[in-house]
Length: 365
Image (cartoon, rainbow, N blue to C red; front, side, top):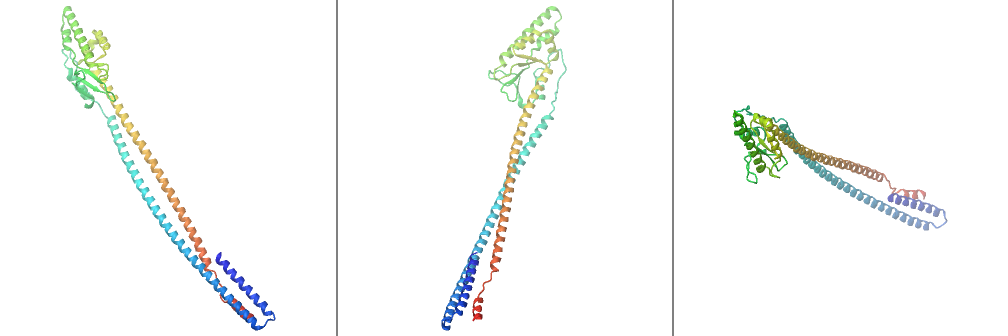
């Protein structure tokens, strides 16, 4: 715009000068004065042309410097944008790799938890070495009780001959999950009195044997209640193991008052089959507790995995936004470059008349 104005001003001045010369030529002034005036006007015109040429050259130099500065600025901006985009892509790739590594680790934990659940669901409890009932003597005792416990429970859940805080030593302690109190099992059932009861022939011997059974069993119930029922340390009730199904049946059939007394003393009489049922109940509780624990682990890991997935989605969105912004910046740079090129082409197409006014003046003379 500035260059075009300078050119138009120069052209207007040249036209005015030519018109003035023509007017002066028609007047009756002396020729020498007219020549002097023409020479003066020509010098002024030449000086004006030189000034216009100088301004045009200066404008071209300024435009060239501006174009150079703009090219340098565009180059620096492109380099900065390239560096920023490369750093952003590198950071995004690093974060994505870390997220994928975390996902892989959590999936591994979930696989292990699922494997534990499969092992638990496929765990089969075998009840071994359960001997047949015998009426001659109670041949099972502590050995039979320990066999049932060993075959049914893992070693971490029971203790044989453990010592309580009152220095009593029950035959077995069963530890329940998430509970500080243990279940007490006593297997020292007095089988001798039942042997006398079965061998009694007459009524007198029978009465003596019955009295002996009641005395021995009552004493045993009292000993269990006093020694093994400790609040906060052992579960209520305690289990009194009878190593024979026939003895257990005799108790319920002929000595029901002993069963009632045991229940009042918070002692439960159990036979081998009842003990197995109790142990299976403990197994179910244990299995449910472990399944809940594994399910909590899976749920926690799935929650962490969902957080990682959300974080990964956010980082992918950020990367997409950065990529779109980079594309927009590149498009704007291309548009600016096109405008600069078009303006440079228009400047190059400008033509300046150099000797045209002088030739017109000579032809007029």
